[in-house]
Amino acid sequence: MMKPNSKELVIGVDLDLWNGYGVKHPVTTPITPDTNTHMIINGVSGSGKTFLEQIIIRNLIMADEEDDSIFYFADYKGDDSFAYLRKAPRYYSYNNTLKALDEVYAILNSRLSGDLGRETVTLVWDEYMANILSLVNVDKKLATATMNKVSEILLMGRSMGVRLIVSCQRADAVAFPTGSRLNFGIIVIIGSYQKSIYEMLMPDHKDQVEGRILNRGEGTVLLQGTQLHFIKVPLVRHVDKMQQLCLKALS
Image 1 (cartoon, rainbow, N blue to C red):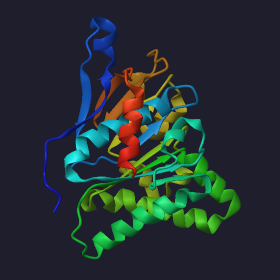
Image 2: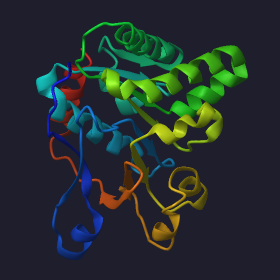
Image 3: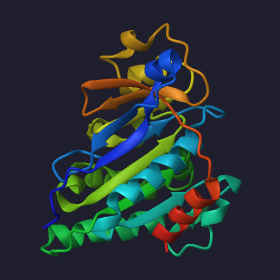
Image 4: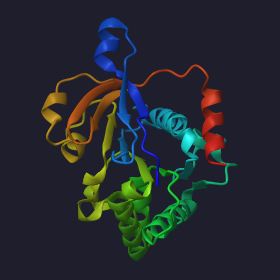
């Protein structure tokens, strides 16, 4: 069984404390087996989403390192943002992203069938929405099968030690059938306020955000559907060390 722990994932620093007092107070969430750590990160181009994604991965690796965690990365765009990961054996780009999903889905099914392995397995999927829409245009049956696998991971993964992190510009319901979009325990929206995105992901909290000025690298976090926080993405002094850590986790 996965060992219970009280470890915390640092998502960012409290925006109001930083702006008002220059205090770097971390916004965190537990990463215990009984906590939903499926995560969705939303942000338009230029919002700082990609950099936040790398920080989240780094912080998650550091928090999980004692549990022999396994990480997979599906990079649909395959641009230079994650070029440093290309040599890692569990990095999959463009047309190969579904191979990452299939490996993680196979682990989930093995555990559901009685496999006692419980080291945490995390699939990070960058530009998930664009990937799904591309599949829909090419092969609707494959797209449907892919979304069904994602839905099953979101529904069953927590108790089996399988975590999904997706990043996209918009989380339209078309890519999350049967309401699976509701199964994310951590929702992050980064960048300026866009009503349609908040209506999709934080409908009960959009009024608390409307009117706030959120710049690049600033955003909102909703934890477990109830805890709303405003965050700032901190700068990273040693980007090379962050990249080395991510590369090692995927190797």
